[in-house]
Structures are given as C-alpha cells and as structure tokens.
Image (tube, one colour):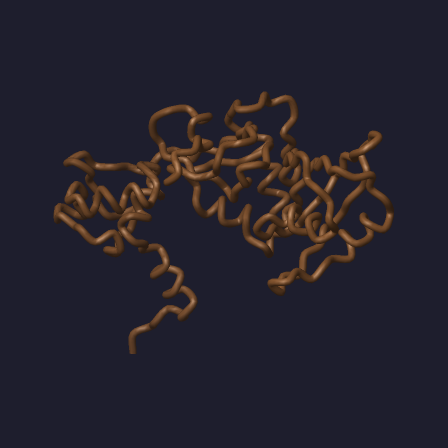
Length: 254
C-alpha cells in the first residue's frame, strides 16, 4: 500500500496554486485587477499556452508565466512605509478620479500592495509590500498587533467618555467595538488630542465609536503599527523598512 501524506500536508501543497491573476500580483508585476485585464486581453501565457481566464490555476514559484512574451520571475521582497496624507484614497485606481496613495510611491515595478488601509480622511503610517503572506499576518485579527492612533476630537474629553471607549459599544449594525487603550494627550479650550490603541481593526473603527458618543473627529493619524513608529517621516513621503524594523514587526507577531 502506498504511503499517503497526512491530509493537512496535502491541503498545504494544494494551497500553493492560486488563480493566474493572483499569481501575477504575487510575482510583483501588477495588481490583481490589472492582471485580470491583461489575461482577458490575451497578453498572458502559462507554460507556453495562452490563457484568458484570470482564475486559471497557477503556481507562481514553478509555472512559467509570460506577459507579452516576456517571462516573469519572482521579485525581491520589499517592505515600505508611507506617511499617508489626508485626502488620498487607499486604492490602486479610483472610479471617481480621486488621487490615490500610489501617487506618493516610487514609480515602476515591483507592484506593492497596501497592508490594510486608511480611509480618505485619515493619515499616517501605511505599509506596502509585495509579500502577500506577510501582509496577511499583519492584518490577521488573531495576530492582535497593536495599532496606535493620535486623534483630535471636537470636545473636551472626560473620564466617562474614555471609559465608554474601553468598555466597548454595540453598534446599530451589531458590531461590538472597543479600544484596547486610550488616554488624553493634551487639551485646549474646545478640543482634545487622544491616544488610542486598537488590537483589532474594523471598518472606520475609531470614527464609528466616537460618532456613537456624538464626538466629532477633527483629525486621525496612525502613528505606529506594533513596534514600528511613524517617527519623523514627512507627510507624503515613503521609505523602505530597515532590517531591524522588519525583524521587530516579525517578533511582535509571534
């Protein structure tokens, strides 16, 4: 009787094959949506055969993939941080013609995907990479990687409001939202700056919490992801992570 590997091992090998459009994205050539357009246009070959279905199974590490007759190889892994300005959207292209975060990034390959997102009105630390497995670990809820925000609100914060944020609030849509930590950084006559830490992140998490308390958000800046701080990086500027910064993030996810 032939020895069959355990089912979980077989499943792990099967998972290595992905749709052809995703394979192009994992190789750092372009976004998945752009890859799908190239495939449908008949510009992509898989192991010498023209393919027009973006979901054709492919192995980005083993199969020969060509775009316009040019073979693709795996790009070196890149990890980059951006100080996202307010007013730009976290997407590769926008149907409304709004400026995107890609206007702030270096031009040309390899393709880098945002790790999570910040909404249009928010700013601060945003990561980009062509390492999809690493990006998935950063954003996975079970990782519980702290994200730190400085938030200016149109109110004088008090202990009751901070307590409500920590205790959590049930939203009308059923979501239960809370913060891991919050404190007052400074206050003026009409507004306050809060430091808020999340170890999970749902859509518009902080804004929805504060809206529920009838508190206006004037400014929201993400200043750290785990041990990685935004530091003195200028607004709209991007730079590669250092080896030490990447290793510190990896350690924080173990």
